[in-house]
Length: 211
Ligand code: DC
Image (cartoon, rainbow, N blue to C red; front, side):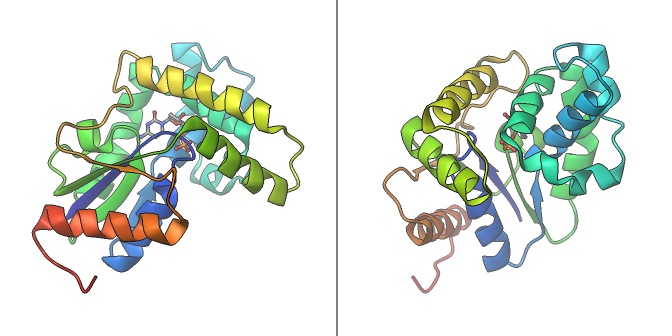
């Protein structure tokens, strides 16, 4: 069984994907990390993330890059969003994601284009979203906990810019698959969002849980 979880930055899709993986005992891949690793690699190489050639060169990042603590930085998220518009980058990361998706026993993947491009045959597709204000507030609390100096307004501006880029790019834009179930987490607590996601997956599979 493949579960595809797509949605914008800080919508709660990562939390939901990890919880679904634990609930259904499936391996999980955060595909955003791959794009973040490319963005970080381009930065370290002194390249230009808006240049297709430099961005493609960044796809040859060493596996150790996936452990780089800077991958979680806001600035790396911005670089990831910029390198991800290049068709060559998306193609270079495709096989790795596809292989993870079709492994025996199934998998949970979260990202932007899992239900539309990476695994359109997924048995369950969720599109997790939330208002930009809610997402900015969540990211702000997260950053504050990590001791990062950034204002709520800066985060909100950054999210709007990234949303705009992710939604309007020519290749694999962020849009719900036609058969995706949309979960808006704006008014939901973490546990409520997870429950709603589990229920949505069970509905898609035609099974019923214990509630
Ligand atoms: O989910 P995230 O914030 O870690 O993703 C960072 C960027 O990577 C996001 O702005 C767009 C890009 N991305 C993508 O284009 N496709 C994916 N499947 C995952 C992420």
